[in-house]
Length: 353
Ligand code: F6P
Image (cartoon, rainbow, N blue to C red):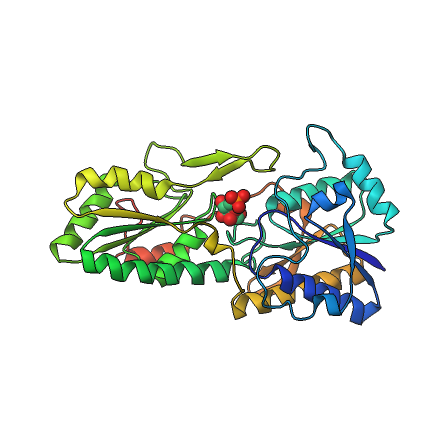
């Protein structure tokens, strides 16, 4: 067997752990040859690949980023305004690949699915993203690490906020889903947690801050980058040409600061955590999950179960058809147990609920 492997889209902690597990499993279980494709689909467009042997993937389990590099702007279907998918498909066959392991988020999975149906080699997908928003998968690796990083930041911001009696607004990543803000907000004892799934009422948040201030308490607000006020829109930082999802969110913490400040006597400050959430070593949980995902991907390849993405359902390893995941986004459902729990312990979710 000759198997290609690529990492696509934004990076996240644990990518190297997957590359390591796929490569070691394939070499050990069936003596397969593994070919690393550089910079995601860009490597297939620009024909940049390299062999991956046992030693190439040793000692990378805990290393952040991806040894293969990645790209979130290179689509074979719209590369510098041209559809080069036929050339990419021909190159896959010229490399003699029997299948391709694609480690990515929904944009990457959608592209992989399209390439497969355009005559490309069969695909096995592995879900990655700190956002934890891939359909059909209850936990993507990288999420646990991001939650740990945000939790640490919230705790640090809380102590300085308390010293000064301030309202501290901390913005997380997560795109259109609030998973990072919700879990880290709970773990970091945020007083207010704002998600894309629940539009926030500024006047209500101001009331919460004033009541806390009257008790000489600072207020810690954890806001997801995709959150928006009632009747308002998400805060777009910029758009990126050629990206499967060209919208880049960012800056809602500053917007909320500006909305809240006129309503409060306490000073309001904003912190945007940004890419610190995507970098560094994966947590032990993410190392284990990524290793299991990589090993499971190798198993699917050996069984010839193509066109599928490894997944976790009910806490068990499983797989789902790529067609069922492509183009989807998994948001926090309104009846999620963590939302109920947050409300019942008095956390404000931005609405009067
Ligand atoms: O999907 C992962 C993610 O980190 C999102 O949380 C964030 O909105 C986006 O990627 C940022 O992308 P970029 O690194 O291209 O700015």
